[in-house]
Length: 279
Image (cartoon, rainbow, N blue to C red; front, side, top):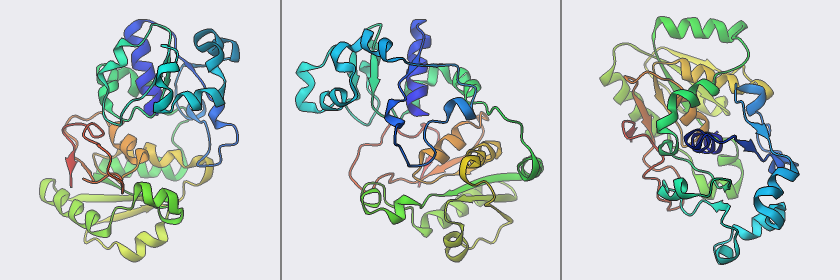
């Protein structure tokens, strides 16, 4: 979603079409692969091999692109191959050639702040709310709904992911709930997680709570949709709940996010919008 949003904003500023290279999803077994076209109203077309070659020439081959992404190979890159040079916002993106290929994560809303309304419209969910999700949406509308997301999964079970991302400790969620309770009236928590057993065993709150645990598999995206319908948000160090909070367009929302996003030392100064609360 960050990649799409950054590239889409650049294409809008230039009046250029956007094409998506989804070749990296071949054999991708984390989450559910490429789903933007199934879940959202994103209009971008999928790039063909010929279209990629037209921009990058011989550097359009996947293995070559990966090699060229190494800092040591920068001098041999085509000007059209734009490799994200740092995790924080990079002002050089607007100096990229008219036809270019963006390679990186682009995890900052600064890349698409000027196109926020369009990005939200294109990240509108295609399918109508139904069943339990429709019931929860009505309930959220009637209360001071606060989404709370606990991200575990591979962060807890995969040593490589754990060493990179780390986990938000229980104290973070307790302090975030206390902060929210001090700033808004009668908060009602809607709790989302990929490990609800752990949540119920380790997090206890003296507030009304709903545990949202029915959206599984290819329906998991509905958790993000429900998060976006809440009035306020407590997010994990996860792009899933980052987007759940960002898709809520209310300028008066309170979003609490962890101060430390990674276990490793990475500059995240531009990862969170300026009005979000770091805790």
